[in-house]
Amino acid sequence: MNAAASQPDTDSLDSPLKVFLVFLRLGVTSFGGPVAHLGFFRSEFVGRRRWLSEEHYADIVALSQFLPGPASSKVGIMVGVLRAGIPGALAAWLGFTLPSALAMIAFGYGVSAVGDLGNASWLHGLKIVAVAVVAQAVWNMAKSLCPDRQRLAIAAAATVLVLAVPSTPGQIGAIVAGGLIGWFFLPGEAIAFTPLPVRIGRLWSVGAIVLFFVLLFGLPLAASSSGSHAVAVFDAFYRSGSLVFGGGHVVLPLLQAATVQPGWVGNDAFLAGYGAAQAVPGPLFTFAAYLGTVMNQPPNGWAGGLLCLAGIFLPSFFLAIGPLPFWSWFRQHPAMRSVLKGVNAAVVGLLLAALYTPVWTSAIHAPADFAIAAVALLLLASWKAPPWLVVILGAVAAFAVTPRV
Picture 1 (tube, helix red, strand yellow):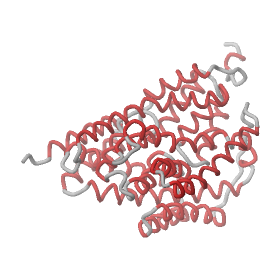
Picture 2 (tube, helix red, strand yellow; picture 1 turned 120 degrees about the vertical axis):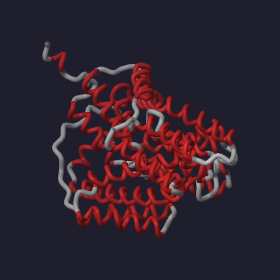
Picture 3 (cartoon, one colour; picture 1 turned 30 degrees about the vertical axis):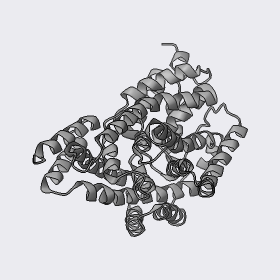
Picture 4 (cartoon, one colour; picture 1 turned 135 degrees about the vertical axis):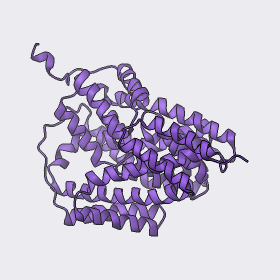
């Protein structure tokens, strides 16, 4: 084989349409959550298409993990930027997100048609499966992000804080405290790297970072001064997408605080949608599209779904595009690694608190519920069953054990 042919093709640019079609196929077939998505991406972009070298792909994944927001979506956006510039970023996100977003909006219409969810046994099964999914996420994240006593202590303290202050300030406070503790008490280390072949100017990057902070601090002021419910909804989802570290399941407590506590979405509908989100491919953040669809006041339906989807993913664009040219500077500073260690440990604590409430308290009411959750966890963790299959089995099992009147 020619040596040049085996090298990654990092010099040529592709059309946004080609990027969209590649990511659309991944959006239809990528089941299994963010870790699985990153595996699919590596096979496609490093192995099959040779768009990136192994080192550059690892670099992009490291940057995505360092920043808040959905990890796999940020990696996709960065790959889109490297292959087709800013239009490629939009094409990559749209292709990867569209299939699951449409599925979640359709499910939202189905739930709205059902009406009262309190006695729907199959939807109760989705909530039970959510217990197993979140429990597995807590266990896996704790093993990788809390490998020592110091970080386990940070996670435990974050759990206590979030349960004691069950609101957005408690969650943000836990993340900030974890970062500060990591900065002062957890050792960091620099990582050797080769600079990424970034093709966007620093003006774009600085503009993205500025817009990120302008919206983060400006939207709450706009929502309070205008009194617009649509602006308040967009602000809530933008904030959730801006402040969640770890992505995926970690967004659960932030979205629960943003939608259930103010009464925009019922808790039964919230957990039913979260369970259904496990059965579709693509990013778990498309759960936001479902929440916008089932809200009990306008904007809801498909318009509300698209509004919430745009709100929760917009920070990912800013945070994927903005830091790319500056990543080499960040990686040279061990202090940044220390902060990230503390933040990641706090994220485990947030997810553990969410496992208790609202997930466990809303789903496990009887021995049969616990048994279904235990079997679902066994299927996910030991048998490596696909999440969509576990979701279906959980719904069927709950329907089967529910007494008929």
